[in-house]
Length: 123
Image (cartoon, rainbow, N blue to C red; front, side, top):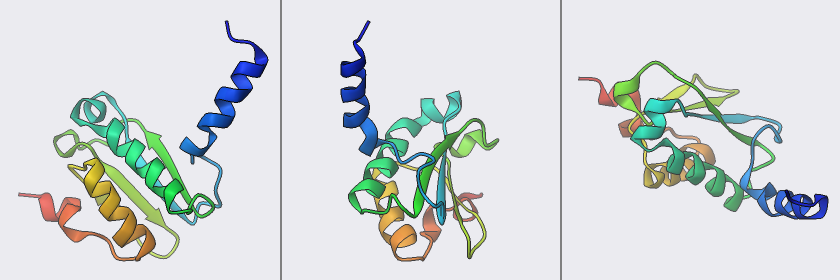
């Protein structure tokens, strides 16, 4: 069992790793973390979004969260981006590298990365 001081130190150390539910939520990034998503590599994708948002200093306006099954397992890992001004954008077959590009172009630049969306990946 950890002491209260040790737990507080762990919390302080990890605080910048968690952007969940602490922003105004102008933009919400939701990563599918059901078993199919995790098996397909969603955990590194979630970590890439959390770290990328923190590094970009966007924690006040962007919330990163996770959800269970989104229902399109063949496209995992799946990420949905919600903004106040536009419709939801669903990104599929995501990787940590693609997450960095989405942060740069979509979250910071305002333009979705069309080639990573579900519409570009339907056959």
